[in-house]
Every structure is written in structure tokens, then in C-alpha cells.
Length: 220
Image (tube, rainbow, N blue to C red; front, side, top):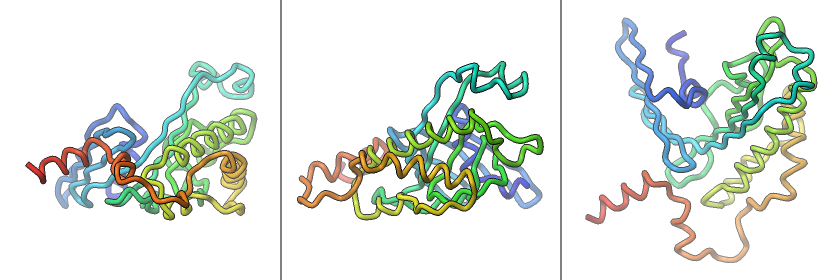
């Protein structure tokens, strides 16, 4: 179980800066740091990784909680996080985390969208799948908003960004609903490589403060 711990744990708990895992095989440390739109996860076993993230949250209307247990009605707050790992050039990579919906812990609900989704979906009685209902429908729409923002703000813009566009066929009901919400918004989002050449300054504007510090050190 401890060996299965991955970046999703620190991305789920933004207040947690470090996790130390001690097993008979040794000690593994995962640490988190924020750098502009990026979150860096440094894993002593697997090396550093960089994630581009977007986080939306807000209050939940009481009507959306009418069919939920009392403990959930006492926490009328929703949140959605999308996270995509990137390479050294800033191009998106396929996440190595489990390809399931995190709510916020991993569920058995498949997710084929090429990103990590962590959201406050209500769970069914077995706590293995998001429960259908108005709150889940609401969160699907908020997840669509957040994903559109993630793509719209993506830098550097490149042909690789197209890999983040999900296909229309989902791996399950919720995955299909998420794809539908995302695809409905993308026609209004400018995220593709422009036809005209970009200015050299624009090529560097996407770099976060960690990369700027690294480049500065090389020139000193």
C-alpha cells in the first residue's frame, strides 16, 4: 500500500509539504513546492516531476445537498483540481497516477481524460464510485469550466497541447459526462498553436520562477 503512494497525495492535500515513508526497504520522501502555475513534486525514489494545475472551489447551494448525508450537508463546499504533468519544455505528459477519478482519494471510477482529476464528488454507499445526483452533475460542469481554463492559460502553446483534448467516447458514465462538459467549452477557448511565428520574448514568458532561477544561475 505504501509503495502505491504517488504524486496525487500531495496534489490532493495542498497544505502538506512533505511525506516521509519508512518501510523495511528504506526511506522514501516526497515533497511539494509551488512555482507560479506549477506544482513541483520531488520524489526521492522516482525523481522530480512538475505539474501544471488549476483549482476551483466555492460554496454548495443547500438544494444540491438535499439528498446527501448530514455530515456532507455540514460541509457545504466544493472543489475541483485538474493537474497535468509536463516535460522540460512545458509540453503535457500522460499522468502516471491511477487513471481514475479522485474524490479526493482514488475511486474505482475510470477516467480516460489525460489529466489527474481531484474533486469533491459525493460517493456512493460503498465509497468506490461518485454517486449520481444533482451535486455530481454540478461538479461535472465546474470541472468542465476548470479544464477549459487550464487549456486556455496553457504556456507554452504548442502542437502538443492538442493531446489534452479528450475524445467523445468515455470509459464510463462520469467520464463521458466530463468529456461532454469539456468539449462543449473548448470551441470558445484559444489553446492551439498560432499560425504566425511567435516573438522570442513570448517563448520565454511561460517559464515559471524555478526555471528563471535556473537560467539565471547558468549565466552568472
